[in-house]
Image 1 (cartoon, rainbow, N blue to C red):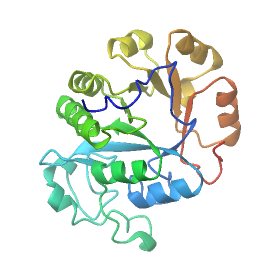
Image 2: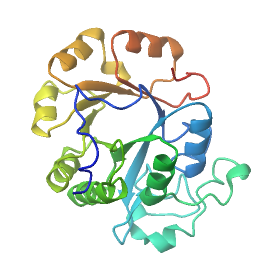
Image 3: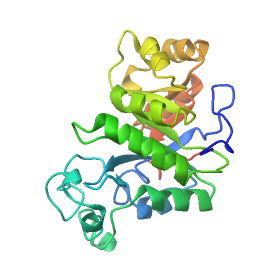
Length: 254
């Protein structure tokens, strides 16, 4: 059922590219929109990291902030509006007049675009505060349906361990990554408790020893947000498995 036609993702069976575009195309197009995905793909990127939270009526949409003010023509909490109300907002003009009229992207639209074009997805479950478990479960359940039969399932990640736990309970077969900004001493125990296949860490906390330790424990390692070419080379030389970057026009995927 669900993603049963997709291969089981593990450290031994890792289907994702090493280069991942942050929020679609970093800062070159309105983040978390289909225009950003298309631009990122034009630079050769085959995998995209993006943020998903729920509307007032429980529909998964792409948005980083808990409020609408920074990246749309709306204001207030993202989960204060229904999907129909969010669809009326402008999610592009804030960056450039060229993107005026860009709609708020839905997870369903992104699923259609990425699968139609052979692209891969890293869904960051980013709940509005107070809706962690609800968002984790809902995003996992919708991803299960939207990627049914896909050759490669989406990778779910979150800073919220409550959201990851709920996602695991709802759809255990979808692969998960634990996101960390600072590295807790018990990071490995936390990742194992959540049944994660990967650690996704701020690049500033990574070194060769940590990456080797994660690999020895059977985990892949991803890192955000790496925008310097020399730092990218260093991390990849240490064996980094996934490099998330805004600099899609500077760091060429290979």
